[in-house]
Length: 101
Image (cartoon, rainbow, N blue to C red; front, side, top):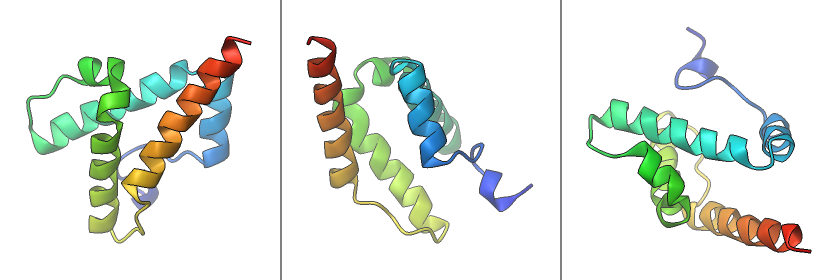
């Protein structure tokens, strides 16, 4: 197995953004759901990925923190969860404002 594909199929930032835009944000929900499923299975915890996906604005910092901890354990430089989570929330608000125009 390729190290790049150890945990998930590799996807560039450009691909991720295009998929999110072309699916009108539905891909982002799918991505969040699959990441929660991954951590549920990896950590053998009792979490409900669908619930955490629906209420993603509440759980986004927790998910990004888990992703960062996994990245650090694999020797990858982390992105501050506060910055990434804040950007996620900001872009969500901006996209809602744009859709109401």
